Length: 220
Image (cartoon, rainbow, N blue to C red; front, top):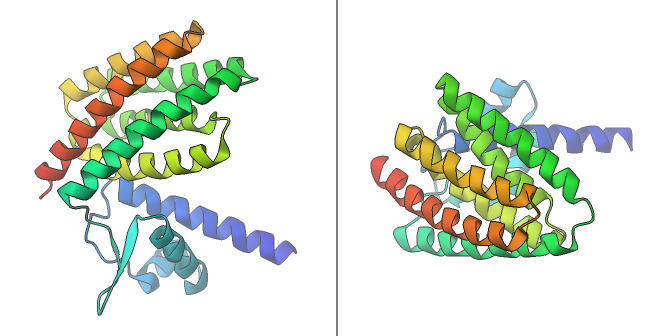
């Protein structure tokens, strides 16, 4: 049993490391994932890396190409548009679920904490931490969704959106737009105005979709 638990935690850890590399664009769309190289970099055997790559394939981050091997997914414009629409719809359902949330204070506290982190990163000009806090803002909302199925799908689509947004979000203008939107949503949640927060989040997700396409074009 102990060996099984260790195996699971190792796969989860490697999953997080590879996903971070994809979302920060250290590994770019279309790049091949070499299992041997990753195993050596992480100091593990190939088995947990292979299991992690299979998980990334199942979740839509990686695709298995014939005669090439596993590579980070490159979305077509049509696929990207579908993803943006799905993310916006799921985001609305996440906010709708808060009407059944028993621990609203827990959400308010977690959201305020990540909001403070994003503000601090912006003031320090730390693009990487700003992006991490921005991602964290969305994750806090999704993690507090009371419907586990909606929560899982919302987290998957949000992660895929994050794959393209890092490079473009680094501009000062988009920093300010992101901060403004997150601050407005946070204020609505702190005041218990969940319907208002939903409308604000819907508008913000449309902005995120625009960023997705601009980031995609910039990195072609």
